Length: 350
Image (cartoon, rainbow, N blue to C red):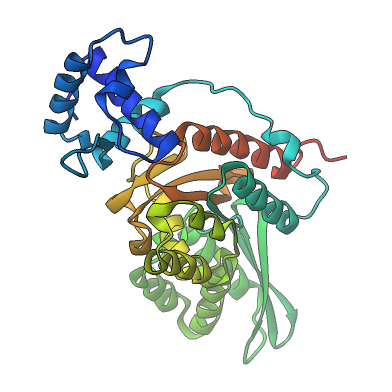
């Protein structure tokens, strides 16, 4: 993205700020009233014309003022995300006590966020999809049963009783434990492919069914998208914004909130290394950048919160392109801190 002169940048900011506040196209006369600019309407008109040629603003009607383009919003958002240490808002006062259950915390958080921003919001429960295997232990419990214990990062534990045709001697049990731990410790689910599973089964020989059931146990421990809890709030807030409130767009957005699959796309994209973030865990999708088709008339801001040893969840705010990005990102940054403070093990628990 090309560099803008300080004057052009100030005028672009003025256009965006006015449009965020009013939802109406912004003219040069309105911009000239900004006291810190001290520019004539003619000069502002010329600069706005340049900004339009560069693609940062557009003129929706011939006689109208200008509104920000997606490129303009992107410039504005990127500048905001460069700022350091935004002031802590009073979000922490709206959070519930640390002793409450996680589900209640998440439901309260998403509701508070919707009330505070007046946009639609969602939050996913912590997920262990990317966690690594720490240890696997097989041990005999009865002649025809073996207990499989899988321990993941975050000390997530999954126990599974595996039926066997005949008792396993200590030497066989030791070999199976060594086989599993040597090949699987430190791996994520993404690292475990069909080739590796086939290799393990071949080396296990007649005990390959045990390997299959251990792999099932790992899959259950890590979880899948179907079991991921997602909480939403404020879907009806979209009716407050004329550009989103026509029946077609509104019903699509409401449906997206009711259908978990659409929201999962946001979580998957936020978990990927690519995207529109800056390493802060906050990403902003403007218009067509959204991974959810029904949200491409919107802006979507997501943040990742992290609990112990990489267990993560995603928070998202969905609103019009003219959303108050600065306030949204401040809320998300403070929310991340509060969630991590409340839910990380050992964070003030008595």
